[in-house]
Length: 343
Image 1 (cartoon, rainbow, N blue to C red):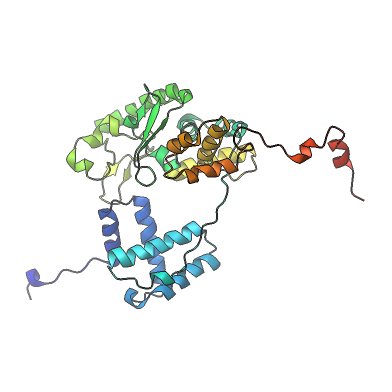
Image 2 (cartoon, helix red, strand yellow; image 1 turned 45 degrees about the horizontal axis):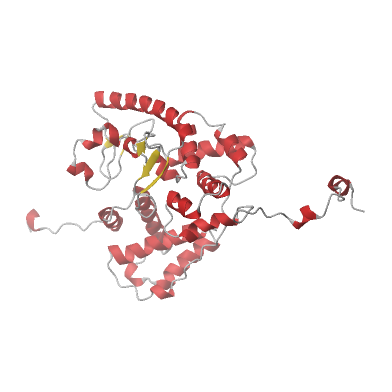
């Protein structure tokens, strides 16, 4: 048989998974997570053929994650989403056993909210571009990845607005640009533009563009307006097409800096980058802003999601709720009571 008649080797399973993910324009983070979970699922069952497995094997894998690995509910559900993507979108197999799969229910927990003093204390320990990112997380209610993905063209200094593109659920929204950030951010952009000019002089200056924009507008990837607001220090190679570009600051970098700042302050709370978004919403409600306005700024599809912040307020509506212990009267000397030792 000649080489022309030889059948081509079919792509490997994980390569098929990557192809289907990219066809649907899923993010690189989703691609990496799904591929990793599918690999773990296959190895967990000693590389058994996928057609020979179903709900029982999936439940066994998910149970091992929960019981042995002690993973969070969100992590367990992400693993399930990856496996179902494999069967439905890659293998195109019917899943009549879908109803037999045990779905973990995510517990409803109240968000960690910082006081205004605590926010100022943490932000006061940040400097340079890290301070700008922290101010945007808190002052504009941005999610961490939304902040890092901001482009130069997304900031309107004249209207004090930030256009968040392709946020959660692939939705765009407009939020505020804090006035306190305006001048420092413009000074920051002067330095970023100088970096971009150096990249262009060295034959670089490319930035990743979403979907088919790179093909429609070949020059756009080098234009100033498309550059990231917070570019990475070094160039990197895109694992999907091998192109060398300057990406935005990595998420772990911002997480590390925020974590170190919180630790240095000694604040006894489990503070993450997302805690600034929670604090933004809570403080707006404390200031009397309408919950619908807060919903729009946060980009929540349902006001019920925004209403969780009313549970962490110390005053429902406009009336401050006082503890009945505070109404016992002036005759209660707290220092005397707490100073006595139990006998």
